[in-house]
Length: 272
Ligand SMILES: NC(=O)c1ccc[n+]([C@@H]2O[C@H](COP(=O)([O-])OP(=O)(O)OC[C@H]3O[C@@H](n4cnc5c(N)ncnc54)[C@H](OP(=O)(O)O)[C@@H]3O)[C@@H](O)[C@H]2O)c1
Image (cartoon, rainbow, N blue to C red; front, side, top):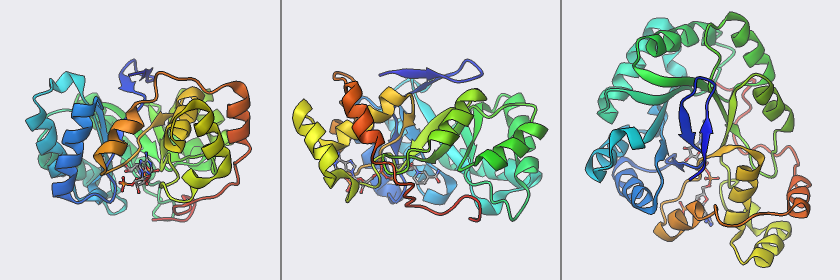
């Protein structure tokens, strides 16, 4: 498993397992399958209502805690200094963990105008050693500019929607120039549709791989952290099996040509 070194020296697996839209019980079995397939990083959120199931799978795996990297996120109704501190405690209670690896502000929710105050609470949790790294999700250049102006700690990660049809070149360059790792959500474009694109099926056939593996390999070669979700054991295993082949420059260029600015999720400038 490749790792990425974050701006505070903490290392994070470059490929992890996402559990959005997975019910709590199902999350427990999917995470167990993922851990036995070799995943060591799990991405959950308060919103997903499955932090407890993730925590059970982690504990029952018997894998040493320091080999695992657990991320959760603060939801839009938890912005503000005191409510962010309370939200963290509640997430940790559900997860059953003492120390978290990465805590993210899920959305900037600019209309609430509380993300700077919320960030101050994450800085406090970080200073107190309750979380090994803090970051953001769905932040744009505009919201990051404002946050960086007020922050004492630069976010370690910006988790954003990113797949071949929304390549986010400008935001990736901004993150990189500021020492922020870019993590891709919906890295497979949510599966259907994207994975049938002829460019991807052709490159997949050339390498004797699946289109999903080609897309994940594209992310890895770009340097993105990536967190594909699946509840299908065969796909869970397939999605981590992307470290023993290379896309060539022509493949990378062809996939880059698929960028259409096509968003599947909400617009971070207005959401929340
Ligand atoms: N920060 C945010 O705002 C945000 C937003 C969205 C997502 N996320 C995170 O990012 C993670 C991944 O994003 P996502 O769940 O939206 O979408 P995704 O990982 O791009 O795609 C998941 C979909 O693709 C299918 N799939 C997975 N592997 C496949 C394969 N090898 N071949 C064919 N189909 C495959 C899955 O089906 P099956 O499950 O049926 O196998 C599922 O329907 C989430 O789980 C969550 O952790 C974060």
